[in-house]
Length: 407
Image (cartoon, rainbow, N blue to C red; front, side):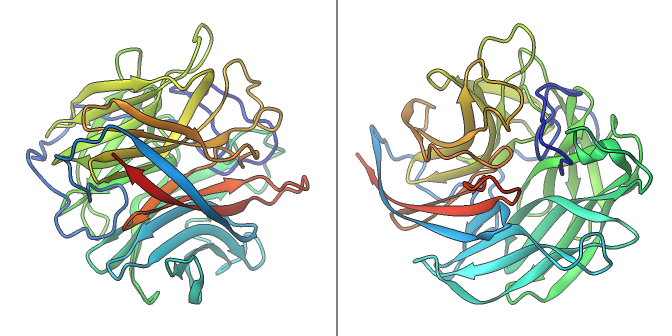
């Protein structure tokens, strides 16, 4: 979600109004899709997938910080992945060209080596078009030999007044959910709309979506009033089936800002808890989805003294599930310009016992930080968005590098 001002309020339809998102959920209506026993298939580098040893029994995890790499100012919402060649791919918001101008670039991808040095030139993933408007929130997967991008595009009302700190959707004429696919050299293979220029934003709202690959189709979760809407989509953006997951006290608490990921052959979801009046603290919530997208809650995690939000980074590796999320102190102001979120990382064993929960930085995050994680051998990469320390408006992507030690 693109915001047009400084004030970002908790709440909103469903459960949240976020700096770069609204809300998410999933559950049982629609055609059946058999996910029983499915694995990620040919997905080789999707960091939301299970790439570790699920049967390993781990009793502790520790991280040794190796260094921080800064991308240029103006980068935001990082998606980081390990490639089949043992290198990294980073997809970010990185505007290039006049805003709201046909062909101006909004998102770019970069190839990095294991030392986080950029290899070659970056390439555009999205551009502004008159038909679909301004690209906004994006998520990325690496599937087979392709880079798959699903992104929100917004046509803004040119006559709308100031948004008053709310989301850009408040001033939008329409939204679209777009799909694009690329080869790893940046050649565009496909681009088209999954959902084309909708205007009922209670029924469909596309900020801070999430997705996974089931070996044959994309599973894309977006916001809808009081639920997350899940679409099963083929490689050309055709919708095969639609489902919903309600949000509430006995379910996930957010319909956006979540993650879908594979763990031990099952499709899982990481979400935040309900927010709003009467809620004392906001946990992380973990659940498993059935073949018809019914939800079973597996566990919750309450960070000590903090509200958790946006578990956008997931990685299952070596018997450990890593969850990258954002948090700030319980009772903080709903204005994240006053009380910004900071990046955190939690690690769990196969039974969701907590092994580690650590603050990655005490610097203020930009928006809801949007952390993601990747791994090469025993090196963990944690990418996140920082506010400009000088007080400027442009965020900046930082990538932290750690050595993982497990017992």
